[in-house]
Image (cartoon, rainbow, N blue to C red; front, side, top):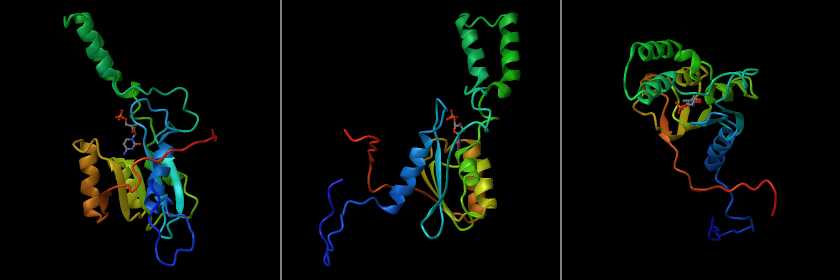
Length: 201
Ligand SMILES: Nc1ccn([C@H]2C[C@H](O)[C@@H](COP(=O)(O)O)O2)c(=O)n1
């Protein structure tokens, strides 16, 4: 980013340092890079009232389950595809397949197994509690995340993306945050892009 203009009493410090909130959200974005979810990678960073990072997390399967749980979104989608693969001919056999797939839907998708980023950030905490903390999340919290944030005593939600704003989970989360008087705000970064190099050229 272009250097900031010199200020009076310039002590020679660099001016293009990263602002604290950009750093906190960048930590959440970087944490999301650890996620194995093929469709949505979510990161969370918990910051205490002294502006210290006290926990980071990303969406992942429970410890020890990383290699055997499904990452698919919906078995039903696969069944629907099977119907259309038969030219849309919903024969008895296909109907049975669709019904069986629907029954397995939940068990064969990631949703009932995956730990959300907020949960993992709280579990990662390096402090006795996260009361009064802010949480920086790359995706607006789900209803389950909202319960954790509220019950853990956090005071503020800062989010990057709200792509599921119409979902029941997000609507329920917003309803609970409103009742619990926990403000949520969309993050507007000062630096649009942060480039990380893990090895100098
Ligand atoms: N607040 C949230 C909402 C969702 N997640 C996780 C759960 C899944 O791994 C993924 C969403 O998958 P999609 O439905 O977009 O395929 O994100 C989370 O960690 N926090």
